[in-house]
Amino acid sequence: MTATTTTESASTRTYSSLRAAWIPLAALCLAFFVEMVDNTLLSIALPTIGRDLGGGTTALQWVTGAYSLTFGGLLLTAGSLADRFGRRRVLLIGLAVFGALSLCVIAVDSTGQLIALRAGLGIAAAAMAPITNSLVFRLFDDQALRMRAMTLMIVVGMSGFVLGPLLGGTALAHVSWQWLLLINAPIALIAGVGVRLGVAADRAEDLTDDRLDLPGAVLSVLAIGLACYALTSGVEHGWLSTVTLASVFGAVAAGIAFVRHERRSAAPMLDLTLFSNGTVRGAAIAQIGTSIAMAGVMFGLILHFQYAYGWSPVRAGLANLPIIVTMIVATPLSEGLAKRFGHRVACLVGAACLAGALAGLAWGVDHGYAAIAASMVVLTVGLRTVMTICAIALVDAMPANRTSIGAALNDTAQEVGTSVGTAAVGTLIAALVTTQLPAGVWSSDLVRSFFHGERIIYGVLAVVVGLIAAGGALTLTDSHTVEEAA
Image (tube, rainbow, N blue to C red; front, side, top):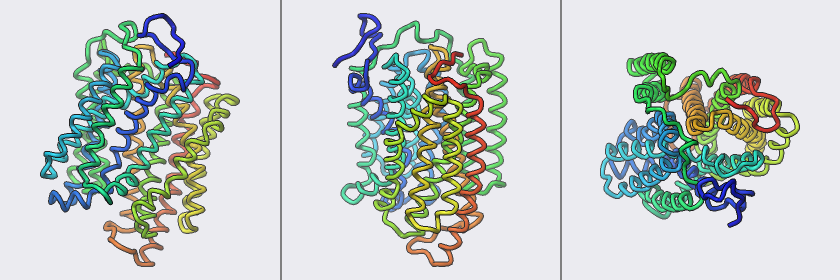
């Protein structure tokens, strides 16, 4: 393995190319893949799980919701821990816990136990997500290599998110649903070995020695967790239900308390003055926009392909391949935009692609798959451009001893956007089409109603996502590389 080193010490090792860094890069991508695919992998198996464990509709919703809730709620806390106790160390612990908990599925015999297991997996995934991204920066000194490595990470992660239902549906044709979790154990082991062998050890000077902000951690978990739950509860119980309103008020109260505490704390978990940096603020805002678009389209098209078209889960999963292919082939285009015009203009072009693609979907949903696929391609160019540039700009704009909290902020923004996008589309479908999605082939009247609802939904998303992503992009600099410093 060829690598250039900044010193003779292995703890400061960096690499001269992606090929030279293939062991640690593959390990980090594998860790990112498994945490992303677990978001959607079990969704296709919920009917089977319900039959095997006797769970009702609400319980089955929490089989997937418990993972997202703990994952989203603990991202900032995990990033803060990593910046204090070591990024590689926390990642290795997260991988070990993730793999061990996955093995526990063999002892599960009720939906309650499975929900608890999924919540535990979400906690372990939160310890992995922000760190896999921040450790990419440790592998390379060259900014171009960092951007290409981050591109690879995003492609792999989004592939996991998109391929989850396809992989799950294909596996269920041959094995029991428990194997969908059991496979995590060997993957986590392989990723752990690769990280241990190829990623440089943490250096004391790269970490912060501030004491851990436990009140800030608790308040952030409450604020983000209650906010994520409120979005889920709004779809499930209604937006004016007692439980939804209580969750909203609780999230707002916890958020206000968090901001007040962080401003007064001598060692805050999240230094709010960082948001005075336009790069940090704008990148986080733009990431919310991209995730609203991604989650909204994924949720809507899964229903479109499987219910309105009557396609099988495998065929519906294959229908999403334009997203994955474009993620890969759009790399020269996105890098060329950033290199020639700078981050601000490149992200504005990406925002225009997002808005244009959503508008295209509003027209294309009742014009056949070719129109939908074309819009998916344009959407992915926008996602690829905005997500990669903003992720790199945000992390690199953070102080050297706060890169994990920067990556956690990036991932938290995406998780918030994902929750908002899914909840928004689910709510609009319930309001515009039907609250109950019938099984089997839909009637022609229901299909027409669904297409009408989709036109409105994607039209609204085009405006909302375009404004959010463009608003965030406008605060970025004209840097052609990532030059910002906090």
